[in-house]
Amino acid sequence: MFPTILCLVALVLVGISQWIYRWRNPRCNGVLPPGSMGFPIIGESMQFFSSQPLDGVPSFIQKRVERYGSLFRTSVVGQPMVVSTDAEINHYIFQQEGKLFQCWYTESARQITGKQGIMVQSGVMHKYLRNLALSLIGPEKLKDGRLLHEMNEITRNHLHMWNGCGGEVEVKEAIATMVFQLAAKVLLCCTGEMALKLRRDYKDFFNGLISFPFNIPGTTFHSALKGRRNALKVIKDTFNKRRSTKKSHDQEADFLDCLLEELDKKETPLTEDIALDLVFLLLFAAFETSSSAITLALKFLNHHPEALKELREEHERIPSNRQNQEMGVTWTEYKSMTFTHMGQELHAGSKKFMAFGGGSRLCAGADFAKLQMAIFLHHLVTNYRWKVVKEGNIIRQPGLKFVKGFHIRMWDNGMDEGTDIIA
Image 1 (tube, helix red, strand yellow):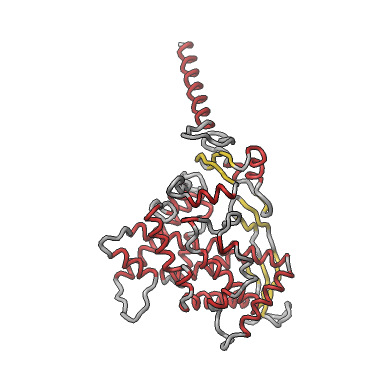
Image 2: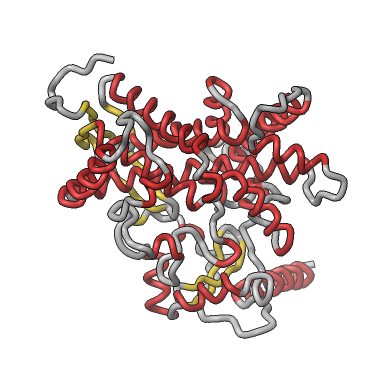
């Protein structure tokens, strides 16, 4: 009996050791770069998610580059991967997608953004969906006075509201709410309480994108999936409501109308599930990145008053050339903001600075985000002054986290900071 037990234990130990060996030495048709796969399943996730300061290269990357070079293997959230920090290689990968490389996302990101969403599509279908998105938020559409008017109006209204509620505001959440309201109105004609409810459904979406895909109550992934289901219900109900509503011939078609027209075509590759996933992801992409970028802009402007002075001077010159001083920013004015645009690399998509991706994965909403940020800065610096009252702590984990928020106090141009603000 005892020898049998020993044999069973030995077999289990051999099996575990083989499993660990295979985990640390994954099969590959080529030659894998050096690196460590960490513990089975957990991999190096704990190190990847550890808090990192905002400035500099995250220590997770820095330590491995110093040890293994610019290309290394690792494992995060249960999935093996190769990390490249080489600008030439990264640019080459973007250019060769669909040829030598295939776009890939974590299982958690696939499930949360949609298994048929634009992120996981490739080839002809990805190009088709990207063109649909560009038809709404691409440069040609942004030149349209209607969308520019919406951006200007919503930005003005929110800044006025912040100023009227005592002047102190937590910037990251306030901007996220503002940009989400714009995106919801443009994409779904969704406003008011419904837009606020939809915004709450996205609460854990960002944190769930890179997480262990364990659908267990209490986990961020579970919460993100629940929010996805709720948001999709609102989006689908909006689809159905629009289908049942007759549109007058003289009423301009919006993005939702375009999607429904595509769905009604006989030979369309678009299905309702794909359309729902597209709207769901566009809503998230519109507000999360822009709100973080604008908050960081205010932080850096606060630390560099000479840059703020030059920015304000550029924007104060713009209204002086208008016939109507109350007009919002026009496309021509936006393109004239040379200092605001901080040079051409952001627009050209250089090899060393790919803020909006590259190749066929160049973000369809890049111009929408840049225009939104420029319009916000324009109305802020030409109509208000502000002071940071609580900077909090901004960290990367690996996405940006605004610990304790980023609070500013606002007051109207021409008023002293201490003057009471009357709404």
